Image (cartoon, rainbow, N blue to C red; front, side, top):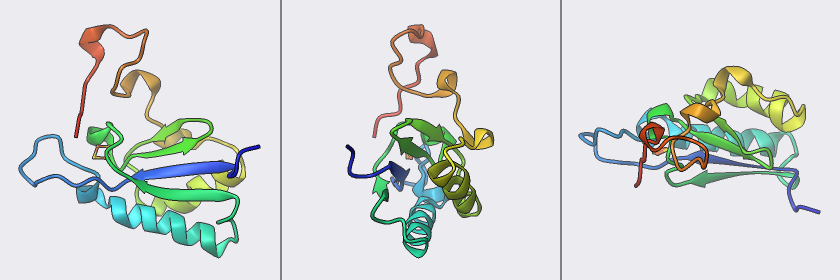
Length: 124
Ligand code: FES
């Protein structure tokens, strides 16, 4: 049995202002991460659901990036205003917040069934 029912990671990675890749830190990643941690604590969920900060999750153009496990649901453009909705609907209710999902075909990285030309690497 897993230790946590759900485990959520919020990117807080930072890059120089002139870096064309951008970063989640510049879009408020640390505030989003702190809001998740605080709201889970306030609701008494910290022992069953875990919110961690992360480094770059390789979805920089769509940040602030959040990924929720075990479902491996990827959210993009997440703001502090979205935190309660993700907690209520997804972490507690089990319903994905579709309006914030980064679709599989838009995720960067090495998807095994996607043509090489569609892949956008975004290494740190
Ligand atoms: S900087 Fe956040 S996903 Fe890359």
